[in-house]
Length: 252
Image (tube, rainbow, N blue to C red; front, side, top):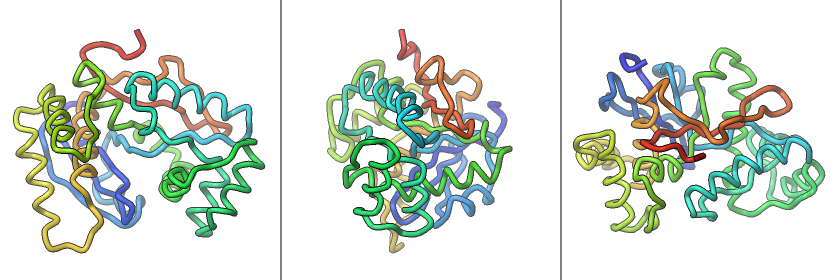
């Protein structure tokens, strides 16, 4: 897989940012307003994306999803960075029908017997978009895997991070983690960030940093590990797992 194109993708609110690697080296970026358009741009062999994949539909499937999210919070020691996932139908309503917060909360409570935070509501549309894509493209199911940037940074650094990703120390700490896989991660970060000068996008530096770590992680290909080691699937068979790579397993 090292000779093939891989991607790391971050949902930046106004669209999807992808950073590409080929032969384990930076190979450009793209930005698209829809996930379909992003996929059609290059169709990478492996794509790691920072949205939950494998959605709960009821309290039974919620247990498996919460197990995954709980492990992610535990290994990062940053609980607030992993938002609870709305129900599958709540995400669909947000993506397809632009449902209100009140409507989505009502649906999620009916499906999962629990409420929903505003933070989870804000990401529900992106979650629903990727879920809809996977349901329509069975062949992509093994090529598109959920990954959480904070889990990936923690795995690369070999210890929990100390600083938030929007602070200068936090950016520096994450660039140090990326040095595990890249010779000059700061240069690569700057190359992508400069491309957005003068564009009316909502891309922040942490969006670029997140896409970059996912792409660098994806470049490890078949060497990737997943949380949990024995992962489950959602009610339609989509895997519930988070990919990462590090010198040491996060599940030991």
